[in-house]
Amino acid sequence: MRPARYRPLIDEFSRRIRSGELRPGEQLPTVRALMREQGVALATATRVYNSLEAIGLVVGEAGRGTFVRDTSLPRSHGLPQQPGGGVVDLSFNYPALPGQAELLREGLRSLAAAGDLDALLHSAPQGGRPHERQTAARHLRNRGIRVGGEQVLIVNGAQQGLALAAMALLAPGDAIAVDALTYPGIKALAAAHRLALCALPQTGGQTDLDALAALCRRRRIRAVYSMPTLHNPLGSVMSLADRERLVALAERHDLLIIEDGAYAFLAEPAPSPLFTLAPGRTIYVSGLSKSVASGLRVGFVAAPPALVPALEQAQRASTWNTPSVVVALACRWIESGEVDALEEAKRRDAGQRQALARRVLRGCALCAHPSSYYLWLALPEGLRADPVVSALQREGVLLSNAEPFAATAHVPQALRVALGSVPLEVLKLALQKVRDAATCV
Image 1: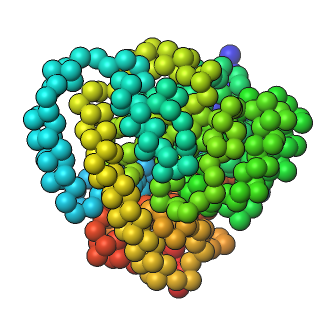
Image 2: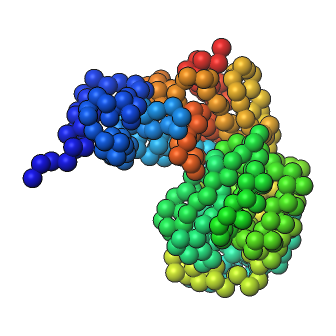
Image 3: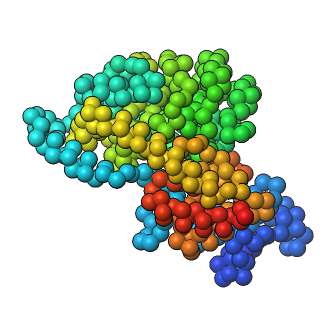
């Protein structure tokens, strides 16, 4: 039997890419040029490039062509969570302030001296103990969420809150409307739960609600995922008028709203949350990983009363509950005012870092909120992100390209720069390297 025509071509391109004959960023012939050069059909040429992209050797860009991928970048899209020593990590945010280690030490001592320590050795009910859920509900009032503890679940971080919503309230094949640039965690959940993500274009960092309305007219959309207060990665804040229109669309088309408030504590004041505008159809998710510490995996889910049992059952089926010691520590810090103080201090810290970034990156095309811990840097025309990320990695600076955030096949040539994980003096030097690599000057 003769071998399929596309296989020798795949093998040849693979050899040339891995040997370095075809360099990272080099553009390959167009599909039609490959057809002419190799005397193959359109379907064969297309299959060659699709196969090369599937194994991570090339990347196709709508309207531009097919390019050799920089294979020195990790297959995790340039987002390794444990960078090696000496690397300045601008890919993830682990915002911490001086004195937080001592706060943990004091908190653990206080917890050890508590009267009913034995209770922490036992499993808590799904969603948390009643008094802890009330504490969480009081904390959520800072974000404009006014509910009783019976409507709040304590979970293992905001990501688990999103996962519980997917497990309990969505089914494989359901279509979810998301921004074209969105949080990578929702992409991971969609893949795990076989959900269809429908990308909405964004203008000036804002969700195109006309596109959402048109999408809902074309097909059945089950839910919309939104970050109205401090969008990740763009840092935008949705206006009250747009929030009201989004809620109206959700009412008209019977959409579940999943509202992600992970970074909302940084943007004050902010318009009313979607949960407040549509309390009967909104799931609100937040946590303490950014406002307190990334290692404190405590999140909160506020939900309509009718949906709480399903969310509790999903937690029972996954992690059963949230560790009692961690929840007790978090609740003590909420009750003592430590969480409020940390949030205020981190708003100031993020503002200082944004101001520094804007000074160093003057001349770059930036999109960010003045008190967020990240920014979006659009690269100049003709400059591709993969070689920039790779060059910075060799310089000891780790950051992300746009691929983890893109919900469409078209991936913009841009960088997402996290500002919250390194000291200011180290951040300044790293940003200077980013500026030089991105040729903003």
